[in-house]
Amino acid sequence: MKLIIDTNVVIAAFGKNAFTRKVILHPNLELISPDFLLEELEEHKEEIMERTGLTPVEYPIVRDILLSNIKIIPFKEYNSNFKRAMDIMKKIDIDDTSFIALGLSSETDGLWSNDKRIKKQEYIRIWTTEEVKVYLKIQ
Image (cartoon, rainbow, N blue to C red; front, side, top):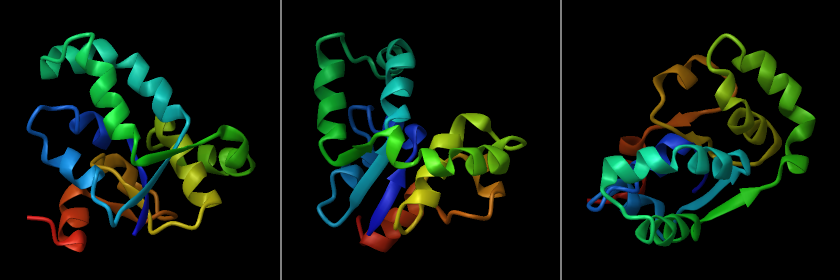
């Protein structure tokens, strides 16, 4: 299974006992994400550390573990669909434009996101964490 992973899912995996981390690191899951993910993680770094109790030393270690199973796709590989994605997302959530643009530019099974708003678009199949868990038969 090949999915685009949304920032909200990666952030959920930072928790010390986060089930999402187990799913992200599953060997039968191929994950990709736009390079925008890295910007968002940096932008929310303090909030993630505060919420999870991670120290400034622990944060990059956990981040790197999570990113070890996510291929980061540079903007140049999905920019041809960025304007179309902007048109799709402008009334839903413009911050998710890069994820939709990558979906329009890639052969994947969809986008893994727990953001209910993104389901309003009808171009990319959206998978919740629960749906991914069931598909992969993870307990």
